[in-house]
Length: 131
Image (cartoon, rainbow, N blue to C red):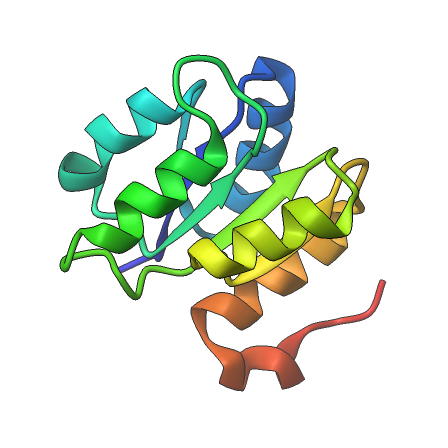
């Protein structure tokens, strides 16, 4: 059974690009365009990992992260924050709220795939191919 990844970003084209890249690696991907949709999808989709934008309408990524961590069912769910906000304050706030990994946009798709693989199974680090 493939691992499930919930992608949350208000840029529809970026969501589709991430979905395509992760689909090609064998993951099942659900993409939503804001934090509220992400919170509503959690129970239905039961993801193994969340790829989460920081700056979004309706509910930002930090609020989503806080809500996820407060839910006992998802408190250990890996969260990869993928954002264009490149400052230490935002990174530290994310880590304080429970973000596992922080990536800055623009990003390389192979780096995203590598980080996803490691978050889902740290033992797979040896399987990551350098391209």
